[in-house]
Each structure stands twice: as structure tokens, then as C-alpha cells.
Image 1 (tube, one colour):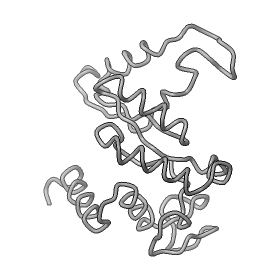
Image 2: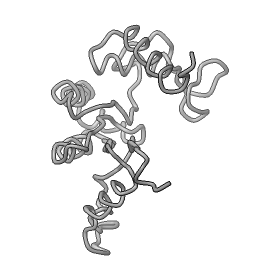
Image 3: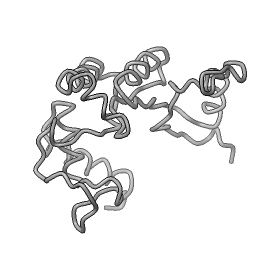
Image 4: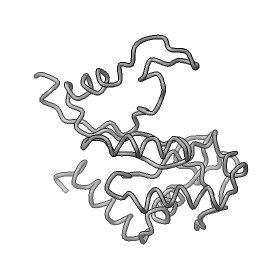
Amino acid sequence: MAMANFKFIDIGINLTDPMFRGIYRGNQKHQDDFAQVVERASSVGIQKFMITGGNLEDSREALKLAQSREEFFSTVGCHPTRCSEFDQQGAEQYFSALRELVVNNRGKVVAVGECGLGSKFIKTTFPTKKKWETGHCLKDRNEPCHIIQVLEVMAAARNEDPVEMANTIYNNTLKVFFTGS
């Protein structure tokens, strides 16, 4: 079976990275091959590309790129390694700018993340943990958070009801993974 018969969505492509333009550590190492990268991905079945925003500037760039092609979409967020930007630029102003990108661009911004946002910005029902603790972790020992915290952050960023969002996610997951249920 040929790969083109499959359909995929790349949910975390970093197309804002200068390497897709041939630039590594500030130096041009090869010709811009952005179009070829996208074409190769499309030829094996990638139907939609979710371009990752790793901080406010990346999120703006990802959105601008998403607006350039029908199959491009973006995420908005701030990677945990870049959370110092909240303090450098003013936490409330930075968070508001991220949220504004989400709210004003719902057709192209399809996810919130990378996320280093904690209960300082969005109130959650679970306490934020500084280290791994049994029963309180979703991802791994280095990124302690509870699944409810992730849901509450996503719902708040999208200005949606967390229970309604949870039900939608649950029903969609049933459709995708448990078709016999």
C-alpha cells in the first residue's frame, strides 16, 4: 500500500525553525528547502500541519505561517523553558497577548501548547506540584501536573466550559479508539 493512501495530521511541526530555511545557528548552511519539506510531507499523506508556537513570538510567526496555506494551522503557547519571558515582559500582558491570539484566530489556532502556564495565571482545582507525586502526575516525573489541570488550562484559554470540553474530548476519543462501544 502506498503511503499516499494514508492520511495524517502532523500535530507538532516546528516550521518556524530557521533550519527549514537552511539556517543553522545563524549561518546559512544550505538553500531554503521549506517548500520541498512541505511537499515531501504532503506526498506521504500529511493533510494538515499544526505549526507549534513555543513562545509569544513563535506563536505569532506560527499563526502568520498558518494563514499562508489552507492546510496549515497553529498552536499558541509558551514552552516551559521560555517561561521567564512572562516575567521579562510582564506576566499579565504576556498571558493576555497569548490568549488574544487564540480568541481572535479560532479558525487557524487549533490548540494551546506548548504550555508552561500554571495556576498563577489560570485557577485550577488541583494544586500545582513541584515534583513527582503518586496520583498527581499526567505526563512524567519532570512535568508534574494532573489531567484536570491540563483540561482547565485548555478550557480557560478557549473560554469554554471545562465539563463540556471534557465530554467532547471523551466522546471524540470513543469514536476514534473504541468504535465498538
